[in-house]
Image (cartoon, rainbow, N blue to C red):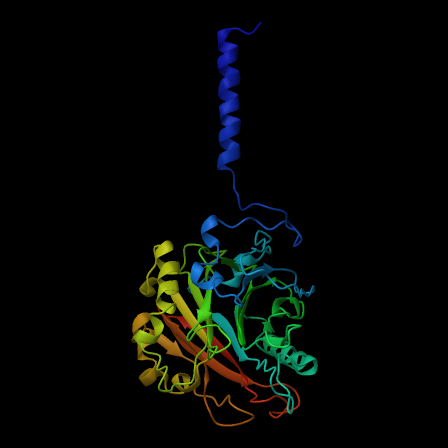
Length: 375
């Protein structure tokens, strides 16, 4: 029979064991890329503004770059990749307050045009686009952190009317690269779609989010021009500045949309503030990277994009990729840009698919930008 001291000892040991279970590292996991994905906190659910869009969907997916995934996400679910598998030399990848390599590409998924065909929606052209991205990754010595794609429509649903985006996830199609484990965030906006692909060995996706919507709505009668934003933390240097990456496809600047504060107040400002305030951040202490087809605003960003400069608190602490012609079919429009606050743009390159500039309807060139932080 146990005396009172033995009972007290057993009670104490039981308490320690329970405390250890509760306080353990919830991020720990197997180093295998097939490990079960951790469950995101409840506040990572798609916000009502997104989930109420019948055709809008957002997916967070991680995976080995050698395995392609073509499963569409349900608009009410977000799945997180297991980012606990970090390469042994993760620290050598650099910190957030260091160089960041970005690729931005309008891949022209245009399902209403046949001659010439669209890009992402055509099997042959999609292969060429992925090949061009792979070649650019190799050209930049694999120093790519984020890839943003816009206009990722692929086909119509069986009803022949409803477009479907993001059947093909870029992170599952890229060539294997040592030290890189690609993962992706995806969203659809009826006739348009976005993808953000990132190196999940270096970057951890943070809650809340991701958030997506259309600058002018996401419906069959809207000029579908979406944004997708997601916040990332550097795994090796978690105390460095967070990175808010925003993939955008701006409307053309016309009488209905100017890129003004009024235009952005509908959803964009709200989603931006949700991410920042939930993480005790503001635009001055986070690196915001906005990349995509910005149309006329991209071509005249410092005059027409003043709302974004003010919103991101960029002023003299911001950088814009160079004025390189990217649209269309070899034309001279400088629409595709990368803008970042708290950063300088060290380099900008454009690249194209093999076969020239007339393989795809309204063909764009891709843009690579190397961003250096302003401390």
